[in-house]
Picture 1 (spheres, rainbow, N blue to C red):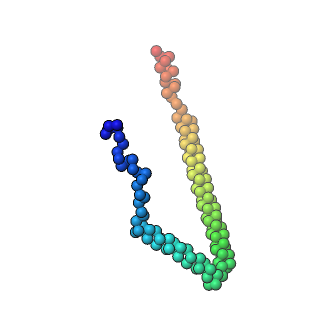
Picture 2: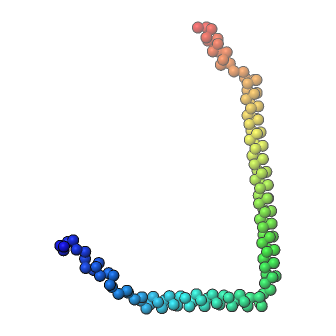
Picture 3: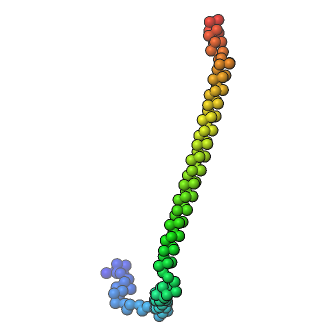
Length: 130
């Protein structure tokens, strides 16, 4: 084997290398995070256990459900009112368009009755004269 065809010596000995140790700072940081998470969870559980002593939980839940239902009723009422406003405004716009188109057609009819088109008659006379 020549030098060029041989793999580098570092690659041959990767299997026999010692594993790197974890840095002490990283281990301490993870340990602190674990302790903080556990203590926070335990504190919340203790708080939840003492909560029924201070507040009547059933009254609180029933009041929250009552407020939720009344809020949904108000929302539906307001949506119904808004839908009515949209419907009325659409009908007003439709009535306006229908009246304008009716007036336009009435004006065209009056124009045809009082001022008959003479351009067709002139063409016929002009064709006869030639």
